[in-house]
Image (tube, rainbow, N blue to C red):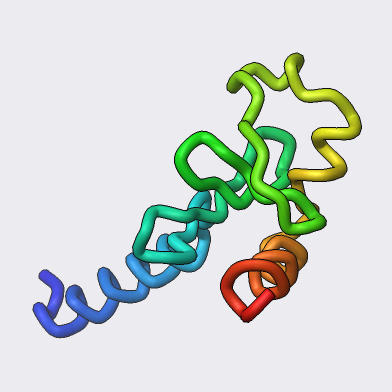
Length: 98
């Protein structure tokens, strides 16, 4: 039979390990609903009501959800290789006084 305190400690360790392995798919950037979202293929987009924020600070309509509707120019303008890269654009043009 196991001691109840050992059981709780062991279970907590298992839960911590499980949480550490989770991957964030979406961040809320602003209470108005602007989000940073992970897209198929591992790229990130800054999204707001059907629009995405491009590298030069302009919002543009997001193409259809199917990846085949997104050309190379769109992918370069509106998708980012990491959360940090996307947040730099956000902070420059929207969140940080751009």
